Image (cartoon, rainbow, N blue to C red; front, side, top):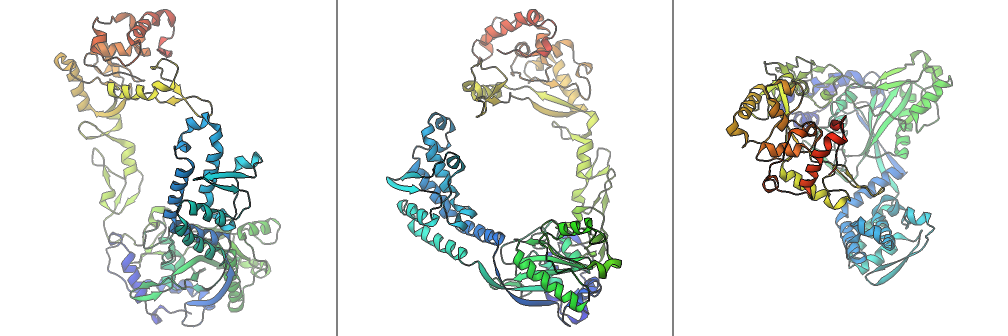
Amino acid sequence: MVDCREFDWKQFDAYRRENVEDHECDAPFADGATVLKVWEDAKNRYLSKLFPEHQLVMERPISYEKDTDEMRRDFSELHEEFQSFYWSFREKLAAAMDPEGHYHDYHWRREHPEFNDVCQCMEMMYSWMNFDRLYENTIEFPWEWRVSHINRYEADIMGHKVMLQPGMKLMKTWGKICGWLGMGEEFEKFRIRQSQLTNTKKVNGTICLSIHPLDYATASDNENGWSSCMSWREHGCYRMGTVEMMNSPMVICSYLKSNKAEMYIADQEWNSKKWRAWVIVTHEGIVMNRQYPYHSDAIGEAVCRWVKKLVEEKIGWHYNDVFHTDIIDAMSDACRHGIIPDDPHYFTHFMYNDISDDDLGFIGDPEQNKERWRSEILFSGEAQCMWCGDYIEFNDNTEDADTLGCCGHREEWVCEDCGRTMEDEDMVWYGPNGEVWCEDCYREHVKECDECGRAEYKENTYTINLPVTTKVAKSWYEKVKDHTDRHPLSFLVRHNWWTEETHFDEPHTEQRCLCQHCMDVKQAQWRDSNTRERMKVYFINATPKEGLDNGFSDEDYDARYNVNNFTIDATRTDFTAAMQLMQPHGWERAHRFTAPADWRDTVEVYYKEQYEALAKAIADSRSNYPDGAENHRYYI
């Protein structure tokens, strides 16, 4: 039995003070013995029986061989340590094999297929920093060479020839190339570290089983260079889950203690975790869920067998002797075959549920546990404020997992639309009539005027389109003019590397939102003939109010209305009308427009034969498309 009054909680209290944020609770700070009464009651149900009296952490030595996941992590750290070496190697190799820089010029490479083998060789060498290559220490040819049955390639590097073959020793070949590139010293440091990692697969360490509150709090905080969403230090988005694990009657914190990295809390040393996993102990089974920061069947099996032995000896529950590396699937199979009464479903509250198909463990003996067997297993304990100790009710809001405090003892705001609780006034958004909304509901109901910034209900706003200016149009034209055999004004220009086609989006109009007041001002300006020729042209969409019923005259509409595509800004409205004759809406009134004599002199011309093409569009629009000009795009 554990009694929280028997322990010194100096380090735990210091860690709480350090990591509970100021805004999370306004109540007085509660001492450790008060906060941990929930933990004490939970662990005393049965887990405390596994530990010696007055002891919350047990240790034992372990000797094991690293598996692929752990080796992959070690080599990932090697990659980070020697990044500057790797990028320097890439740069010097590229300068030696491709001095003209053709590697990134795909157009040139298509015209010079003989260069492809050089590119394949460079890409193969770039991949030598990958885990599989470093771990196996062998050269592997690219897929394109393998399917072409190429099993030898002579690379030319600064006049030096090197014969490459699949299966050759990677580090020996790489060292020779680095010597030619003047990187021999840097490579030797890299080679020594790679050799150390490859030749130290068997390791000795210390595994721990703990129900100590500070081990739950530091479950993802350490000095070994890894973290997770449960980190207190880094404000992990599921850090409240560690409190639920601490207060769970069935969860043990297991970890591999670091023998090198030192972690200090309140000026005292604490175990830094090199590897960690939760172990869920129930009648139904012993389940180790996701391991951090890597998966190790060897460590996992050692821990699970240790826990199994303790539970059978100290509590009297029994489990089948078969160790499963896929315990969840094994339970499902056993249930389907009638070996166990039900397939247990493990779930949590605020805690991120890491239960998956590659979890480890033992299935409980159904003969002894049949009457107590459950199909639903909640392995979260109570959520609790780590400042004042108050209970936190689970409300199915995952955002509440992103805290260590109760946010109680202070004012709260509730969204009038969705009912969400907001603990900080900075999270509150007020509607046009003072409604209290969360940001999501505010964005759903309100738009802000781009002219005056006033917030209005969406149904009381207008969406307008500014025309494409000559600057934008010219930029678009310069972009597409070399990629099409059509006349440059064609809007549907496409290209991709497989079909030899090019695609560029057409120039788009800028969209703006106006409130009723600003819309009235714009209409008034348009009615003023003195202002009219100096203004930029505005377009209005038909939603939410029909533009033609909003005080625009037919002449204004004729000159300005086009919600679809391309318009060139001009200083005179008749020029804008001329440009719109290239659009369906303009064609409907083509017979009403006569181009002024000085049209070509006034509007800067960027398109070949633009004037003649426009004249042809005017002449042909009625005769060629009498029944559907508005639905036909005309290319000029």
